[in-house]
Amino acid sequence: MDDSLYPDWDSAYLDNVDRLYRLMYHKVGNRPDAEDLTAEVFKAALGPLWLTASKGEVRAYLLATARTVLASHWRRRLGREVTQVDPDADLSYMNADLSYEAATAPDPDAGPRAEQVLSSLPGQYRRVLELRFLEGCSIKESATALAISVSNAKVLQHRALRMAARMAQELEQ
Amino acid sequence: MSRNGVEAFVDATLTDRRPKPFRAEPDDTELIRAAIELRLSQSGPPRPDPRFVEDLRHQLAAGTHKGAPSLPPRAVAWRGGERAGLAPASRWRPRRFVSAMSKAAAVVVLMAGTFTATSAINHRSAAPLAQRAPGATTVRSGDLVSATGRNLGYAYAYNGDPSWVFMDVDAANLAGAYTCELHLADGGIVPMGDVVVHNGKGDWAHIVTAQVSQLRQATLVSATGITVATATFS
View 1 (cartoon, rainbow over the protein chains, first blue to last red):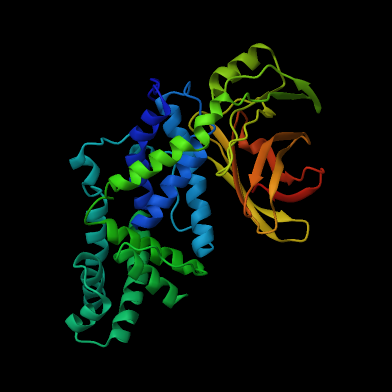
View 2 (cartoon, helix red, strand yellow):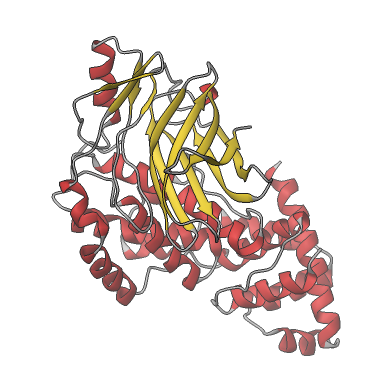
């Protein structure tokens, strides 16, 4: 844990806002929610902190706050938690290299894992997810590419996602 | 399974919009998680918009955290259920504080900061001193349920370094300041500080120098001493 101190609140904020935003984006997958949750964590966490807390303690506190803020977000949004902040695994986000290249690089594990999941799916299932998630096609464009109706494309996407989720779970185990 | 809800969620995620709320079924969560993972598989999370960073910076500078250090924290300690005054300790320095209390052979020790999303009321509270397993990350949680069975939020107890207790209140009919109390396995009750509920919502967190296994319940108590809701940690 980094035992050095921040000279002021502004430094604590500026040193951690990128890290926290990217963590939240990783958990929710969209910008508006990531921004809201980042703001919520800072507003909740900076109040009780004293600058006698070390950088490592500040980050640990932000992470702990992020955990409960994210849990609350999912409960409000969907009634159940979808992703969680793991205080151990996600500490890497809070201690991450903030160079532009490092910060915007794909998760080194996520790409191969996604490829592994997709390659394990039957042809049509894999293709609809590739069109939607990798090639940025709308559901209508995907339906056209697959020569099926929009309704069928929606059903196909849903079934493909369900199978992908199952495969992802099997890979984790 | 909520196919339409999941579909709408996927559409929103793929276009970087805020998904609309819906009541997800248990199976839906796996699909949504897979969608988020697929979405992020080709590129890492982007950096935040500089305008967002700057706006939030200004909000925080004008907000609660600026005044927080000037609010003197209250300190309380509990010994065998009796309340005893303690000199205020600086906020959020759990290790040093635990060390000081250990030297004093205090049975009970307190802890650090309280927060709400809307207010900066700060308190010191008591929690039992205990040896924690370093690095352990047990999480216990419970729904915050009223006497009539209504869900008013939830509470978490996170055993780590440091350990934390969180309470999240989401109840349209609540407003004002409430006391959070921790009920211990040995029957002790420790007031941990206040949560301010604004527009039905309030958040609260505390570092605790205790094993979370010693915590039984967290309760939300009104200013008149009525227990509004109880979360039993499981």
